[in-house]
Length: 251
Image (cartoon, rainbow, N blue to C red):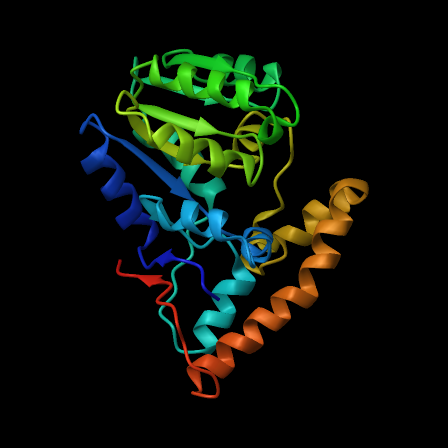
């Protein structure tokens, strides 16, 4: 579907992060799900931002299932699981961690939950994507922090756009995860779907039922374009239409 994905297992992703975390370089990780894939249609800038990422991981059971049906060896690594694992198993005492948070309570609760971690938190204004000065302030905050990890939690595509802007700075460092609502799940500010719903690929339904006013348009309007993208992918792989892209990246 013209989206770059790295075919890495969860443990391979974690090993990559461990190997790279002390390099002094800035590396950003994106986790394209259905919403991201649909938004990328016809948006060349957004496609380039995802393609420029260090790792691009599938965070969607529906896309994973479609890929498997087409014989593609897709792997599934959700941003929520990766973020939780890093904080509970990989980030060490006194590691420096920058949070670009949606609101202040996220930062304060993370500091309470992990008091041994050296946190720095920045809360940008709403509508960040349309405020160049606020974007620049975020970039400066990260680049001046000399951090080990960066977690950007201001929603898509703002998080990915910001990560890409940070990557342009030679002073930037750290492994950066565009993590969606992951920090809110960790701090119980939002409730994640039960494990059974996660396994069945129904996490989207749980989120929709939890916040229907905000999310119903996103899910309803994503279905037709996703179906069309899947049909095009099937036609492309059956030879009905020619492929002009190579969206799959070696794992």
